[in-house]
Length: 213
Image 1 (cartoon, rainbow, N blue to C red):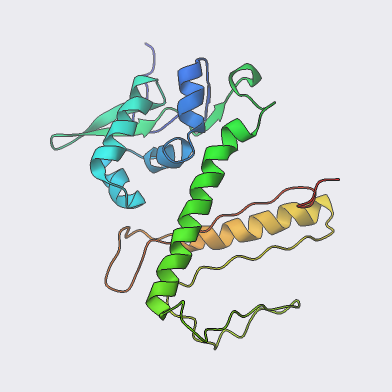
Image 2: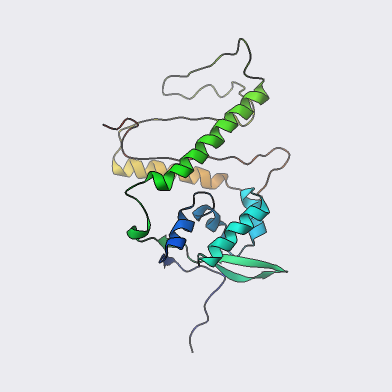
């Protein structure tokens, strides 16, 4: 007698077969980032709460992921449908991804990151009372971090870039270390409280330097 499929836990891997699946998966905001909320059975509303996104918007994209086969129905929580990701790992055929034109894939993501960061700076300036006459712009040089005792206000935006010489093992170790920090920052109580705010950290690492030669 054949085994009953386990609908509450995603299989290890799935091979993407359609352009619709590839496009949905590569969506920066509502692709893999949204699917991660369904590694265990969850409702669209719980995913929206975890991502601090409007419920109607997340529900719309959950349906898109379901309709193209990247999400599966896992059961029900009361009257609400629970979904689970179709897999933990997705293999996308080269023919379905326009890697010859990488900006078609990452361009929208980078524009969204840039816009969100710029708005965070404007919000921080407003909270700090900037800009105003006599305000200083401080540029810190050197290997050490700025004095953390300096009061920059809550949730000050920050950007730091560094080009270094690394062996392959060091490169991977650095990525793993930063990923570990971000994983440990994750909380089981999503959503903003009186003294918490949704915060975003973007990790970009690549071989090379900013000015291509």
